[in-house]
Length: 267
Image 1 (cartoon, one colour):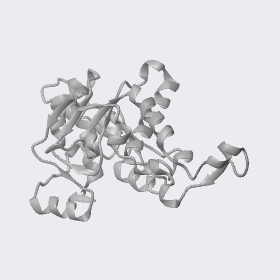
Image 2 (cartoon, rainbow, N blue to C red; image 1 turned 180 degrees about the horizontal axis):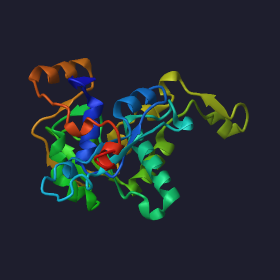
Image 3 (cartoon, rainbow, N blue to C red; image 1 turned 180 degrees about the vertical axis):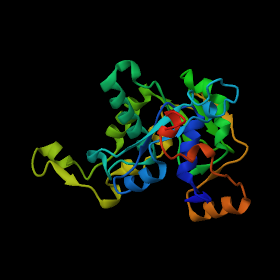
């Protein structure tokens, strides 16, 4: 959804990640949307902190590039547990697997999770880079809304949380079939029976508060937002546009060619 001329909610989420100081951006996206998003976002975004170092003696050489990767939901989980929270875990799993193939020393310790379904001032996060890089748990809160009560506000999670969330889903999410109580009792009849349609694949409905229920606010460094808008419906979108909290597209998103960054001036 556009929030200004040539500037969308997805662009805003990517810009927020860049302001948070991430080393790479991993986006969970279904295959049918991948070509559209790839064309939109290209391959990278620039780090805004390193982009604006006016006193740097060699600013052209010291700009930092943040690569963007699009990752699909694994086939066995597609349409069965692919909720927003699972999207974060899915992206973290891909990032971990890719880094481990190079070296275990490259495996990330902390992940910054944000969503294109919320709007607030993204550059505000730049103040808390040190907290995030020191592997401290961090979260945004707006009017009592945060990820622990299933809001879309950004937060961090650690690599040990991945295993806990996956275990929670495996133990609590339903599939199409379940074990037959009659078979368990008598060892006769069908071993599996189909669940009613409304009870199948409950993992798709798990909120962030369910998946990260092992965490609490006391585990987190919490920062209050002066204002924020969630984008869960057309009504929410109209309310945001009506209030005139205007964002212009940051110049660092106006990228063309990677050679314009690292090449010589004559290239």
